Image (cartoon, rainbow, N blue to C red; front, side):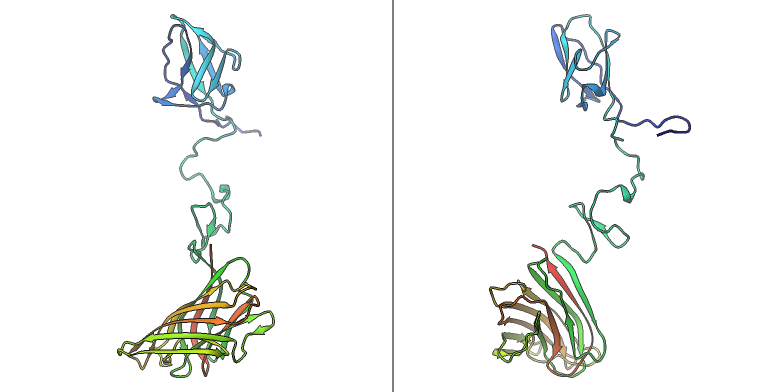
Length: 301
């Protein structure tokens, strides 16, 4: 490549510390600033002995930080200098603020919305290393149910659904989950079993269960539909792509009813099918959904 003016200097040029000759000794340790240095090879050095440049490979060899002359040096010999040229294909340490984004070897999307992780990959803030965002559904007014289709794949073993501030159109309703396969919604009258326990801020605890239902019920005492009332929680889907076992789920959620009654919920459910799941349906026991957000994350092993 041609340059206008002086050709840029590249390489990591270093002059070794002075070395005192020891009578009858051929091998010496090279240092810069009292720290051992190791040239790329004997060809990456200029060595002057007694005012004469030495031929690399024959007059001297290099192993690590040790230079060994072809014959023992004697009293009166002088190692004038050893200059290490560095790897001439290596720019050495770049100056501050000179490495552009395009020079990085990291994989992934490099833009203003991602960050560089320790494993040299770019990830979005939604990918915290344990869970990766797969799908988002925003609930608009008047939705009878929310479907998340073709979201379960072999990419992840387990999945986490996070639903936030879901406000039903009808007062005192329960939230339901139905799973989907390639054939459609699993909705038979005995396709699900579930158990629920629900502590309440009024001191009561209620329980509910079913040994045969057409849905997985997440909560017992219903969620209110007033403006400030909603339900939020998580549902973990375990190995939804399995074709050997029934599909198990666990839910933790909290909701508000009557404006003052805080409800906690823990429930476990099973969809009694060994067909691989492809998606899910989120709905209420009656009426529509007015607002809320659903996010599905793949769980990284």
